[in-house]
Image (cartoon, rainbow, N blue to C red; front, side):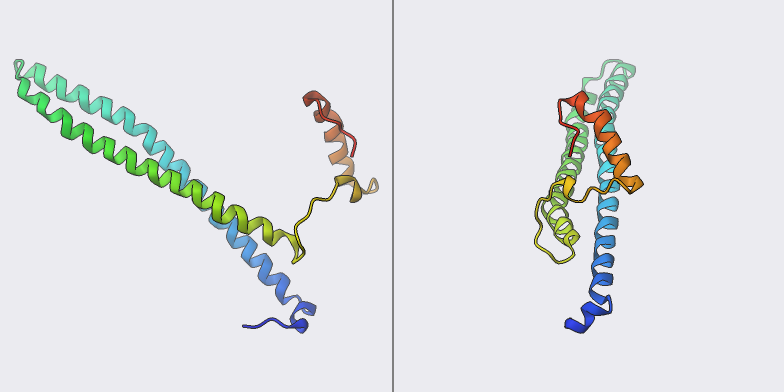
Length: 152
């Protein structure tokens, strides 16, 4: 599909950009949910490893001191450790994907087709709007506490 000057007038480009931005936001949210779930699983694998090791030692003690039960420790810890490392790798991969792909794509789509550039907040400040007054009130309250100049 090619986009011509007439498409810009009827809002086609703007709608496509909004849809793409919405998709990027949904993708980001889903990836963060998966990352949080994997972090929880990874953290619980440490406890699972400790419980498995304690179970092996308890089985050895209840069997009258048969030390051959201790031979179960290496495979059990290897399996849980491998699962921990594989899950940790997926967590890192998700973070890298968010930083490298979504982190670069999303901001470039928030410029309405213009080159991204820094613009001082005071250039767009309108004291007649409730939002700008709220932002300024927040700046005046919070910024000095952190050693920052609250004025735009």
